Length: 116
Length: 115
Image 1 (cartoon, rainbow over the protein chains, first blue to last red):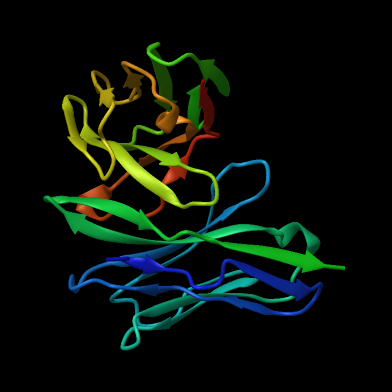
Image 2 (image 1 turned 30 degrees about the vertical axis):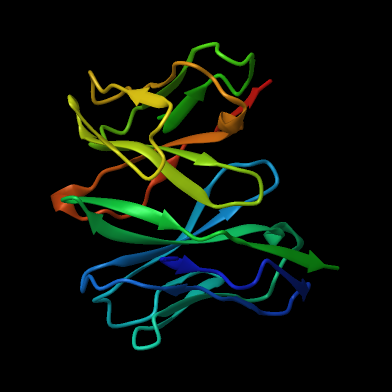
């Protein structure tokens, strides 16, 4: 079963507007973490933001914020004031404990296109 | 501080050939990982290591081998290359202090084509 689900294969947003990228997860572990990574066309993976399952407040990093709804098992990424340079693939990932070690499980990604 | 470096950046292999993808990190991280990313997909874990001398399988280990003789280096070996191994390979590292895994630092990737 999918542990990380990103239901939006592609999203479009106008420059300077906000956009929300969806991510739902599935785990029975009470301790977990959620990450968002950006992958521009150049291919590198860029860490954006992290939310721990016990964190009381939603994580924010500059124009990025994470809308964490634990009961719904969702961790949506909100990008405010979109810029042309935000056009990229965005991956949601979950840290989970497997076989005594902690690993990351990635979703399939959402391709964001920012239009001028 | 170079972070995570990977060599080569690109490689074309013939079916049945072998090669080693190199990965080095200079951040003294205990945890290191190898992922593959197929076109249009997320990353899948091939192998990982929690420290020198310790390695374990991830989600898609078949056709690959790893070793971790030092903290810095984590090479990935393909013994008999197959077209199904055409992918982009990412190496990553993490401090995993106190057993808690936070940000993973990724290398730039190796694009491998098997013909």
